[in-house]
Image (tube, rainbow, N blue to C red; front, side, top):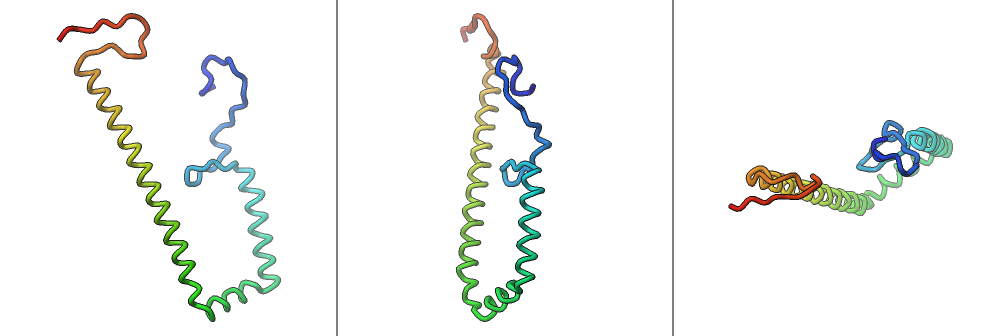
Length: 125
């Protein structure tokens, strides 16, 4: 098992192929297949049966000013999402740069691997 090399704890490991990854969120495929499809079909059938889609479209055309709050909400959400994605990318870049500098330090000073067991002999420089 990938996360349990010593097999000391027992737990159920679910393979990643059972999940869809959307925006860094794992969604089980069975949930997406059943709930999403049933919900989409039932909502579509209901709106077509009532004729609600044409009523909503007509209301939006008559009251076109309502697009301003929609646009503001969507633009604000996209701005926040972009800021979070950029901040996460900068954090990952900083962490990678830190690890690279540590690796260069170990290579340049010819130090022993810190994960190695036993005594560490430091050389006088």
